[in-house]
Structure formats: C-alpha cells, structure tokens
Amino acid sequence: GNSVTQMEGPVTLSEEAFLTINCTYTATGYPSLFWYVQYPGEGLQLLLKATKADDKGSNKGFEATYRKETTSFHLEKGSVQVSDSAVYFCALRGGTSYGKLTFGQGTILTVHP
Amino acid sequence: EPEVTQTPSHQVTQMGQEVILRCVPISNHLYFYWYRQILGQKVEFLVSFYNNEISEKSEIFDDQFSVERPDGSNFTLKIRSTKLEDSAMYFCASSVTLDRDNSYEQYFGPGTRLTVT
Image (cartoon, rainbow over all chains, first blue to last red; front, side, top):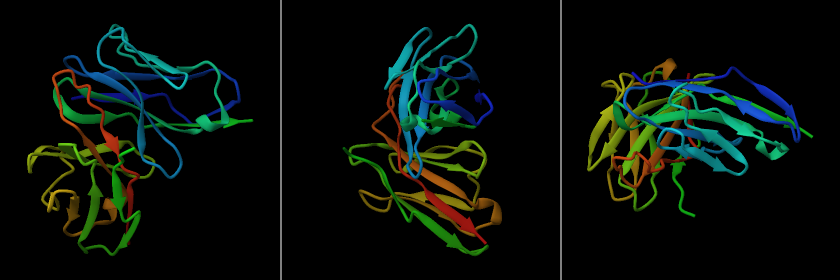
C-alpha cells in the first residue's frame, strides 16, 4: 500500500534560517504529492502540491520538487519567519487509490526570533 | 472564503456511549471525508463519501462507525459505542470532485477533539 515517511522532528530554527523537511514515499502508479500545514488551533491547509514527476510546487516561499527517481518530495524554504511555526505534513494521493490522502507523521517547526 | 466547519470543537464522552461528530462541507463540494489523528500519531484516513454512499473506507472504519449526509449541508460521523482508543482529533474534509489528475484539493475543517473517558 501507499506510505509516506517524514524526517523526525521537531525542528527548531532561528528566523531567516534555511529550512528542509525531508519526505519520501512509497506508492504504485503515479501519485500526486502534497504538503499540508497546520497552525495552532486550526485545520490542515494545503501549502503546495505537485501532480507529476519533476513538477515543482511552490507557495509562500516554500518549494518542493516531485522526484520520482528518489521517491522524494522534500520541503524547502530559504528564509523562515516566526509565523512559519506550525506542523507540516507530507501526503500523497493516487496510485492505487483515488481520493484518500496518506499522510506522513508530521514535523513540528518552531522558529525563534 | 468558503470553509469547512465542524462541531463541537471538543467532545468528552464516557466509554460505551454513542457520539455524533458534525461537519458542514463547502457547499458546492461533492466528495466528503473523515480522517483522525491520535495524539502523537499520523493523520489517518477513515472514509470517503460520494453520492450518498461510502466510496472507500479504511480498516479502522469498522461496524462501530457510520457516516451520513442527513440533509443538503451536514455530514456526520457516528461512533456507536466509544472505546478509549477512539480518543483522537477527527477531521472532516471536502473536495469538488475527482478527475484523473487527482488534482482537486481537499479542504479540511479545524477538527473535533474527542476524549473518551
């Protein structure tokens, strides 16, 4: 079946530091890949997505590239802000199943001023 | 901006009791979902619902669980006899429709925290 593995957290950074959160996946077929963000007290919000190999999703300064050869979708941001503090989830959909999202375990990011 | 809403935000119940978690999906959406997240664990898919029937369910979604769209706006998750291990955050989501590109976003509600004592 489908699975997503995220790097262990939590991650603590200073403002303006570079961020990488690793995500690898296992799926049959051609899944779509997503990063969701959850701010304190809120639901999951789609941050970015990529639907085919070599696509780059980007939003709010975050980027992730769909790498089929390494089955990865790592999240990066060049300069994090305190407001980026949240939980980040990597997820996939498709392959053997339409609709259902399969999530990674989530990575807690804390950014200090 | 349209959003998915869920009530209540926190539900406390005793083991063996029935609970109903409520969701109001975005109005023009056709697909509805429930997920749950046990504290410290992954967000897990429970069930998807389309055209008034379940389209997919996980092995977690056993006979103790049911879903319903009782009217044109609400989407509910019922747990018939709660167990301690049902304590979790339950998220509702909706999406417009699916196409073969799997590109339609699922919009999530803020969640209902269920505590079973």
